[in-house]
Amino acid sequence: MLEPETDGHLLERETGRRELLSRGWLELWRDTVQLPDGNEATREFIRHPGAVAVVPLLDDGRIVLVRQHRYPVGKVLLELPAGKRDAGETTLQTAVRELAEETGFSAREWAYGGEIHNAPAYSSESIWIWFARGLVAGPRRPDVGEFVETALHGAEELESLELAGELPDVKTSIGLHWLAQWKSGRRMLDWRPA
Amino acid sequence: MLEPETDGHLLERETGRRELLSRGWLELWRDTVQLPDGNEATREFIRHPGAVAVVPLLDDGRIVLVRQHRYPVGKVLLELPAGKRDAGETTLQTAVRELAEETGFSAREWAYGGEIHNAPAYSSESIWIWFARGLVAGPRRPDVGEFVETALHGAEELESLELAGELPDVKTSIGLHWLAQWKSGRRMLDWRPA
Image (cartoon, rainbow over all chains, first blue to last red; front, side):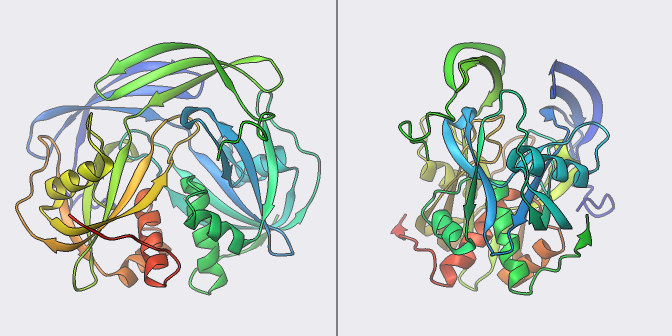
């Protein structure tokens, strides 16, 4: 997606960097960049460790989601299980951990879906989407201070919620869309044992 | 999506607020909240003015997109035309302005698609998606320091790009998914003259 030879007329090149703020996972950086026309500009953005979302498929076709109060938007959202990547984790390790912590489920098979960027104007965040099947229930282990509840829904019911505007979380909308592409044979998934 | 009577066991209530940083549109806030179990926690998040994305439909069926270097993720992304809401604008006014600035097109008809949240864990951002048709070409007026180029693609070609992982921008993926829902009769759009 970045082709320096043909995209040179679009590229911004780093000429300096300063950390504005660092608190836990939240790092705010301010870079100076050289614009394609040679002028200088500043780019302020969050440096994010990346996150993983899981599309967990029950044998009966339902999908395992979580409901959670998302304070910055003031709403309880229905979302795919997801969480930030811890240092040193592969994205699959994050997926296995977050699915277990938030829902209690473990999975016998996993397939990688792809990578999305949810705020490329001001955050380096990637969200890597994994699919999980062969689910086995177990105890939930939410983080301290994390209040989530599990919700099981069929794919048609979820599309109705999306059409009604009740599924505004982007990773959830995209994960379910990719699931529909896979079910219809348009998207390939390479399932592997856990 | 927020039902205080039934979701009380999930709700976090504000007990204090402090602005950590303010630079242009970027405001970082730190709230203290009371958790559902009565304990206190802090929530740091970006207070964002919100943004609008446009799905611009040419009469020949192609879609008008833009290519742009997104510095925080280090990639040139293919995206729907979009931009932040200026103070006092309705979301439709932002849509009309951003479509003209980034692509030069104006539209004879508009239909509202819906609202998504792209980073509800750490940003208050909403992205409102509008559909536009009856497009008329005109001169582009990019912001100073903004380097974007217009790209026209058919819906099938865009699905192939998405399946190949070449369309990672979330608003673009969702806008095109909603377009497919409308074309197949599953999503209703209420078109109005500009």
